[in-house]
Length: 142
Image 1: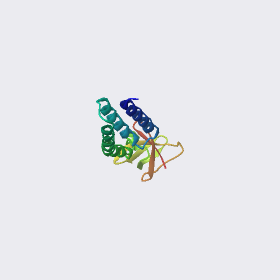
Image 2 (image 1 turned 30 degrees about the horizontal axis):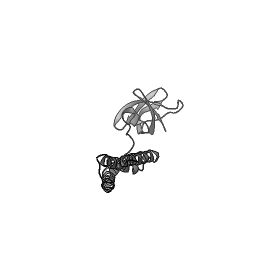
Image 3 (image 1 turned 90 degrees about the horizontal axis):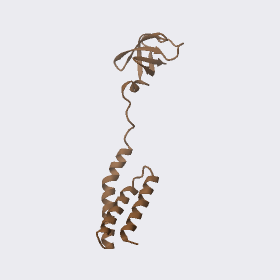
Image 4 (image 1 turned 30 degrees about the vertical axis):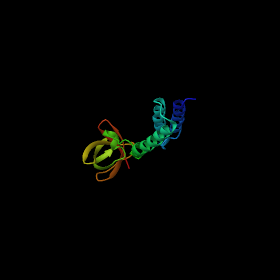
């Protein structure tokens, strides 16, 4: 069996292993090193040179790519924006809030509001939480 074919098989096996072990990101860079060794075999390098290329490429790929991948694993989930960012926020009641309307202050902005549950009534100064935003109206609860 040709040397380059052995390296390609090794690269495929390592790539499949990487896919099956999410979050590890160790086998992928080593698979890239096997591809580099396969290229060395195609150009006619001796087996010792292929092995040196494999070891050097694996070390370089792991040193360069793994820290980048690990940093991406620690990134926070996408931040909510727009009105979705207001859900769960605390609000202060400015004008009485009931099922028909009222006013609250959310993060320095004044919003029209309704109670989330029709039977709830909130008086000025009371602290509430935003359950949902419908259009330009905050639905709040205690």
